[in-house]
Length: 200
Image 1 (cartoon, rainbow, N blue to C red):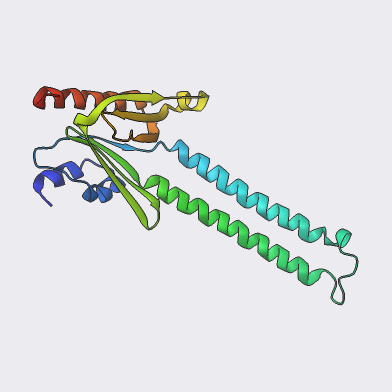
Image 2: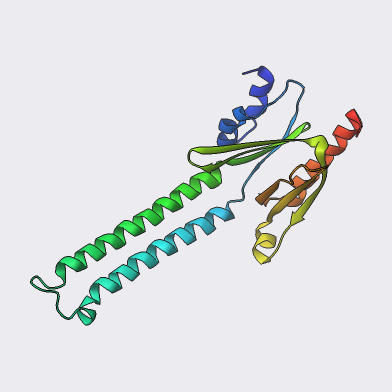
């Protein structure tokens, strides 16, 4: 690792530092900002995961202990064995829901956007084994749109950013961006600096 990259890496969060190795970073490039997803997204993931796990557990418990009203003739042993199977299935399904929640948290936190004076780079994990790295030259940026809908984004100051690009390049979209107006200004100012140095 070059001294310049090491100095830039030292300014990053631990996760940002770990993922920084996946992007190109030239010796004359300046790291402007690291963007991590807003923590409010983790709250949504946790609430959803716990809600699903609770609903699965309660539904299977209600089914298991309501068997006597639905089963007329279960044979020798009564509903006990079947009840145990249903309760066990409910516990397993709830554990899978919690595992899915934990994986979602890991993936959510393993998403970093780096803004430099040369590029916008994003490293994100689509799944535990599937990583995507996007790098867009800052000269291709035309504008940045901040989409902030609803009361929560305003209260907690986060939004979606859409980077509008020249030509047929796909417009990157970044979700749950904290301090969105400040971060969009960093991108716009980086683009303006690039144009001053190199022209259109």
